[in-house]
Image (cartoon, rainbow, N blue to C red; front, side):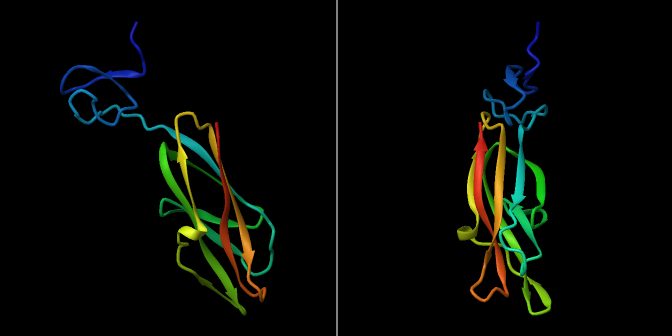
Length: 145
């Protein structure tokens, strides 16, 4: 009986895992590579409701979507190290202007392994002293095993 998680390298003919990007014996690319992805839930808590309407959430510099107070975004990521950050739309008077993507102090790094079942990211809004502006920040990242 054959193992469904294995395939044969087309270059050297040896058995390799379908999860291997390249053959471990000869380095040839695995055409049957199966990327493992894990679910990610991003939740924005409603701690501050006036200034900030919506903000963008990015993982590894790629915008996943926009998120408002009390909203949830769902996505998935491959195994490995990742960085979640935010981009804000901030009110100044009656107009909204986008801010640039957050730097490392506003984001968090996390690692997803084969043992990770899911990832839960919490986003909150940090108010300014005047209350006229706010910024979206990554509050926590929990990798559930």
